[in-house]
Length: 222
Image 1 (spheres, helix red, strand yellow):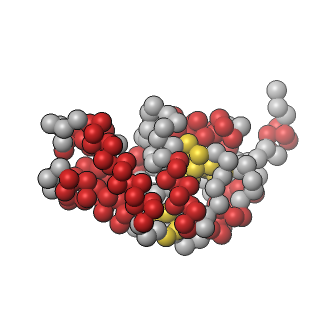
Image 2: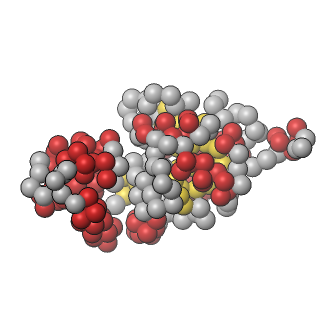
Image 3: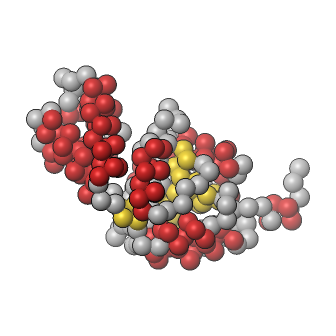
């Protein structure tokens, strides 16, 4: 059994979503899905609205039910990989300072994308890559399931109550809350339902995230 002083001295952990939280990829995602829709002669705006709310295979079932979903996914992967190589990316203001300031082993990435794309984008934007990345291939259940965030905590050796989740999207917020973690929302003008704190921009959250990472146990939602 761990004594109370030992508990208070335990490390704190920060788990980050990637697209929309650390990397500004909205225009890239819209362009990729637009090109994908053109390949299948579908309405690009309608496809993108569905893609925003669902995982790819679920989106295919809704907008391209008469096509082989494996073929649809292969086409999407091809377009996304090309976008990583040639698309224009930018990290959100504050992301580089924040990630470079966090202690090694205290943070992870939890993404619905794939690790090789995350690494490609981070390389192009100069962001450091952590030792733990939980991507779409690492779990059978994606967000809003708590599984991705719980997997990241497990790999870091953290308890859920020691983790702060930084998210921009409702599905990610729900995933963090279901995992029993503190969840802060960023990069949205309206707070996502359920978040413990909300910041319009990541830059505004940076000092508070760093304070969480170095502060005493139990101040997560302050």
